[in-house]
View 1 (cartoon, rainbow, N blue to C red):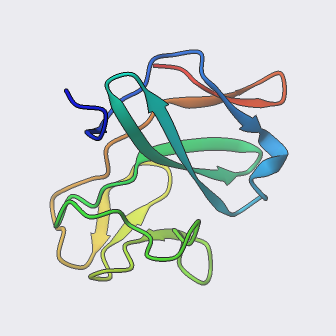
View 2: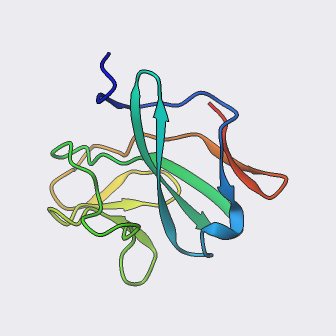
Length: 121
């Protein structure tokens, strides 16, 4: 792999940020530089827990947000792809609207550990 390749997973144990760096009901982008390339993902904070996904729409393979950290619908109840209006459930990543029927976002395992958002696998 080259240094510029976009990766789809990270190892466990990477400390990303304090949980307070992501407001309740909001999302935040994270880019992790590794020897093999860069990983692009995002985390949604919901009910004081976090859920993470690879920043790649299953419909066209593009990053979901055209504006940094703008991953959610205006009501904050779904993840939205800003390119083609695909909609995904926050908890499962399952497509519930738009041109992505039968697909889901790729999970990025993260958790809150001692007040920090940390990769878990």
